[in-house]
Length: 201
Image (tube, rainbow, N blue to C red; front, side, top):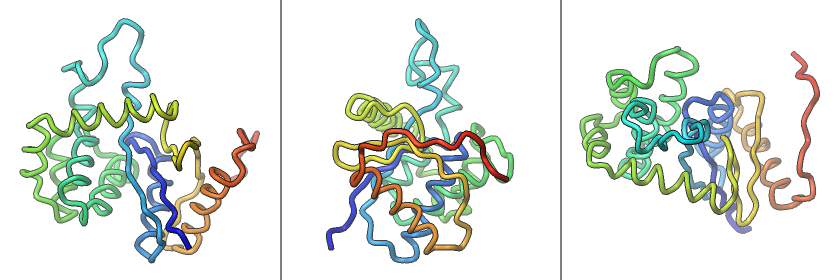
């Protein structure tokens, strides 16, 4: 059986990106045979008003890009620690209510994930991660008209998805959730929109 190949966008600001990331990483940790590419996407850039500078060029927006750049640096230089750092930054933002625009908070998360925070910040200060962030965000928009997170991308198909639950320790459920998304993404692209009018609680 061919290994499913797909990409997924993320921004640490979004709780739905957190949910989807948890599903993917929980299933991978339990042995799911997927080849996943993690694509950074800036919600700050999406909300730039006409006539204002892009976030990449706006010094006033620099702190809002810090956590994302840290995630990119870990992804590209400490890949084996990326799952822990990635989930740790989401946890800090959404579960603990910490301000991931602050260097000390990001450093604490990285160290808790077993990552050398000094090496990550050196990579950020070199400009490498910001360049990668901008390139990958703009490429997702140009190639797939991506407008938000999480967006799953496979081949020429891309779909914005909101998974309402978190997987917890249910690895089988996490795998099934992601596989349902992939089945619809590549197997039934005729379904363009399917949205509940209310959310049962």
